[in-house]
Amino acid sequence: MDVLEEKEIENLVSQLTGEEAVNVVKYILSQGENVSEFLIAETLEAPINHIRNVLYRLQENNLITFTRKKDKKKGWYIYYWTFNHPEAKATIKRMKDSRIENLRKRLEREDSSTFYTCASKCLRMKFDNALENNFRCSECNKILKEMNNTKIIREIKKELSMLEETSSEENSTIAEVTA
Ligand SMILES: [Zn+2]
Image 1 (cartoon, rainbow, N blue to C red):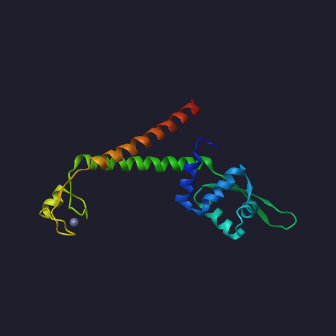
Image 2 (spheres, rainbow, N blue to C red):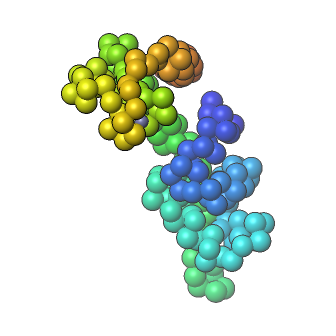
Image 3 (cartoon, rainbow, N blue to C red):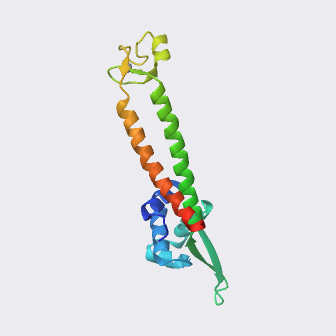
């Protein structure tokens, strides 16, 4: 398999095309390339029309590509499918980058503000909003108190450093290949 972890591929497929596409992709990957749609349907014991529907959705998301061959006897085309590694890899990278970007923004917000909440934790507000509400929760009317967000900050930092680590590994792999 490529540098992509199988788990990452499964997550991507499930997010973009749904859980039922994961088995189809796993089977295509296990067979290498140019996998007949009939073989997929037979192996997964699913109706061919259902499998075609899943394949079509995978193709819409650029996760698989096809070649087709005419069946000379029957006169129709048979489609052969291959997992689109470069596109999947690029999509995973894009999603990871945007997650990193969001986490950085969130971290900045958490670091630069003080948040307030009631004892039931109905909602969280910044100081200005809490002041406007006379430090009363707008849901339950209990007193708002300053909230310790150290734990949230720690969680964000943890996820961020994990993501940044894996994405810099990928960058260095690419650099080695192109060097
Ligand atoms: Zn409340």
